[in-house]
Amino acid sequence: MARIHAGAVEPQKQPPATISGAEVVVQSLIRHGVDTVFAYPGGASMPLHQALTRYRDKIRVVLPRHEQGGGFAAQGYARSTGKVGVCCATSGPGATNLVTPLADAKLDSVPIIAITGQVGTAVIGTDAFQETPIVEVCRSITKHHYLVTDPNSLARIMKEAFYVATTGRPGPVLIDLPKNVQLAQVVPDFDQPMDLPGYRGEMPRANPQQIIRVAEAIRRSKRPVICCGGGVIASGASPELLELVERTGIPVTSTSMGLGGFPGDHPLFLDMLGMHGSVYANYAVAECDLFLALGMRFDDRVTGKVSEFLKHATIVHIDIDASEINKIKPAHIPIVSDVKYALAELNKIVEPPEDLSDWLKQIEAWRRSDPLTYDNTRPEILPQHAIEQLWKLTKDRDTIITTGVGQHQMWTAQFYKFRSPRTWLSSSGLGTMGFGLPAAIGAKIAHPDKLVIDIDGDGSLVMNIQEMATCYCEKVPVKVLLLNNQHLGMVVQWEDRFHASNRAHTYLGPVDRPEAIGRGKGLNLEHWYPDFVTIARGFGWEARFVHRKEELLDALKQMIESPRPFLLDVAVPYQEHVLPMIPSGMTVKELIKS
Image (tube, rainbow, N blue to C red; front, top):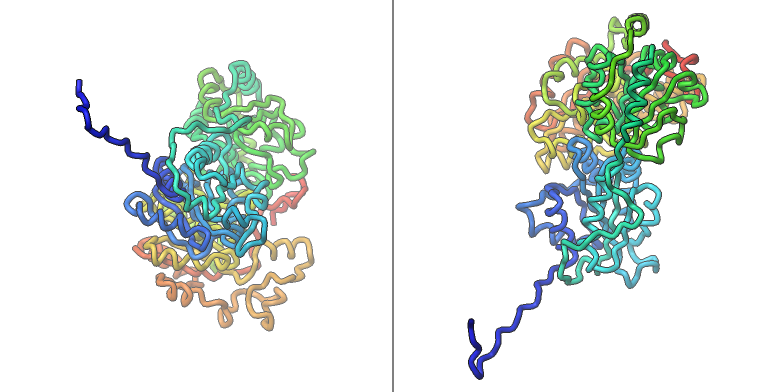
């Protein structure tokens, strides 16, 4: 045993090392496996960015050209991986530019964390320069939110944010960081327990009696249909769903969010359901006697007139979010459960219905009578044709497709057959134009070896076209297949169907041209506007414009094989409509086929 001699000085213990609040945030990100952050700096977030520079070997910071672009890139990262996407912005306008990505993530159940700078705590509430009460702004469009006032709570809050974003029904979490909290020196406690009173992050599981009831309903059914929602993908339940279908022979349809959750080229897949779903999917659901709703929320674009939807069917609704059960459509067998667990248990005991031959023959008759098709004799390049050709060229490659919002989005859902989950990234609930390009950036950064293509429209692309600079500077070689019709196509379609083709500001060219009133025929290439090829090349991209069918295949191959970012501008007629169509609030009886 060591002795201290008289007169000797006992060594003093060193005080614990302190680090800044900003560094606590960065170290927390690393501890939670974050390797990429999409961040745009400003005065109130500079300490965070300074801290990030000290960890360049662990976290890649991607500089978007607009905070909204960074938010959607974080979504593209999260949607394609299932991991948390992280975006950062400064206070005031930087923070409010993240509102749309947060609302989008909330509706589509995407796990992202948005970190915003905020003015110092001493001046909060004084209308200080670049101050907005972003927590109050985002209270109803986030799963959870924090205004951090105590720097000692940062490590705990970061842990809670990741836990809330990823457990139960995934969703966005906002962390608002005053500048003085970022600068404060603290001794972090990364093992501090979470404090989330009332929140249950445990995975709910169906009980055995519920599973038995579902199995019995399947065995007795004569005309069953399964609907694959986004929850199937979020829970990783695609293998269990495929096993269930192979065991029972039940046909499957899908919501927009569920595309890719079941193989799109499987003979029992009926394609998408709802407003622009296939005729045969809508007919099958209208005539079914058992509807198995898996991880879906009965959105109005699926149900149409709610009182008539599934009026005579037994409804089984399995969803992880208890608030969705019976919210829109009452279920006969309501089950709050992780879909993957419920299907795994069901597969242990399920027996197929006695005889589905007549039901499947009826569905095939509907499919033959009203297939998803288009007039391929037209001289112009139709959008459906361009998408179908792209699918043929890429179906055997590891490909992720993103879209903007509008007609091109629905045509992609119809004519690109998604075989795997997390390969279709689209703004479904909020329907946000400008989503496609930044989402493609996030997906490509997460999957550098995959082919990532944004199928976009000219209206949607322009809304975040500045992210072309991000692609060039960050060396992110995404592709854009631009279906350019010079109009806001989906709104034009509604004008044609419901407003006697009266054009109300839906033509995107100069207003002194004949196209402005929407009476033009074919393609007026002499006045094609804007010149997207020149714009793309100005951002360092490769680009090409085509309008003849015989050029399309070669151009698509050039785009796919290019090692650089590439925009293919394809001129398409604006008169084309997305069909079939069930008008909003109507039923399958009002379905429009032509």
